Amino acid sequence: MSALRIIREAAVVSVGALVTAVIVFFLLSPPAKEQTVSVPIGGPFELVDQDGIRMTDKSFAGKPSVIFFGYTSCPDVCPSTLFNLSTWLKAIGPDGDKLNVLFISVDPERDISAHLKEYLSSFDPRIRGLTGTDTQVAAVAKEFQAIYFKGVPREEGGYTMDHTMVIYLMDRTGKFVNSISSQAEDKFAIEALRQLAAL
Image (cartoon, rainbow, N blue to C red; front, side):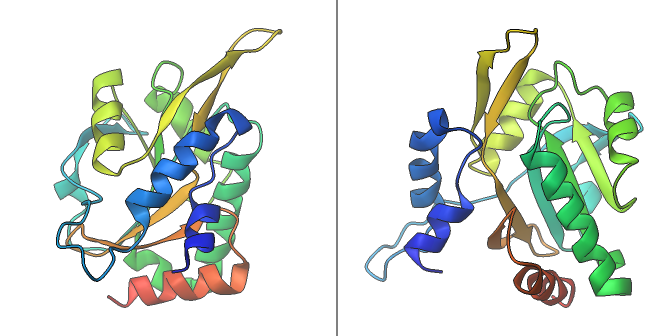
C-alpha cells in the first residue's frame, strides 16, 4: 500500500485527531526493507458481545475477521461504515458467513450490550458488537494500535469520540493481513473481503 493510501485509511473522525492519523500511518505502514522489527497488530482480548456473553480473541479463532472500532452515538462515520459493511457482506453472499465481522465500541460508558444489540439491529445481522469495561476496551485498542479519546462536550449534552477509522482485516489465526478505509470504494472493498474469506 502507498503512503497516501495508508494516511487516508488511518484518518480520524475530527480535525482535532489529525496527529493520531499520523501515528496510525507509521503503525500500519509496511516495514521498510532495512527494518527487522515490525509493530504487531492484533492480540489477545476479553470483552462481552451484544448479548452480554463473554468473548475473547479465541472465540473468533478459525475464521478471518473484519474489525472496526467505533461507537453507537457516532453521528456519521460509524453508521455509514456499518452500512457499507452490510452492503459489502451482501455482495459477497455466502462468503460473508466465513467471516467474523466485529464492531468494537470505544465508548463503553454508554455502549452497554443491550444498547449495542438495539443499534446493530439496523445493519447486517452478521455484524457482532463488542464492548467491555474501560480497561478492557483500552487493552484491545492497544493491541490493534487503534486510537480513541473523548472529544469536546456538546452544547446539548453528551460528547463525541474521536477514533481511528481503519477497518482491520485479520486472518483465521488472528494475524493482521491488511486494512481498508471505512469509506473505501465498493468494488475494492468487496474484493478485499472476498479474498479474506478465502484465506
